[in-house]
Length: 123
Image (cartoon, rainbow, N blue to C red; front, side):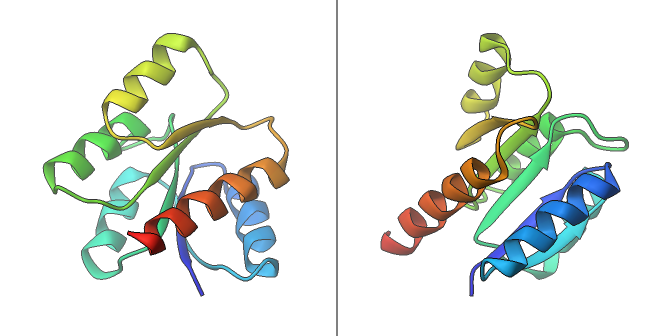
């Protein structure tokens, strides 16, 4: 069962996504900010990360920078309300596999996670 780590300060959104993913066969870990996520990554090796761009303590770009510093190969999807081309390019340059707008359908998010998890299992 693939393990997904979700980092988002919006508890309602985080819990709704976690519940949906669990129903669809994923194990889920939750963090309320980037620092909590990095602490989880010291112990666990999830198959995919969902990282909110705007969080207290350590934002999504900070998480991506920390993942680069750690030379982590864990794929990350950035989730945000802002989907500007500049932001997409910045996240991609920092190693994000994709950026998803929070208003996107939960099914499209799940599809993206499945694609990434399946691709990582083939490597």
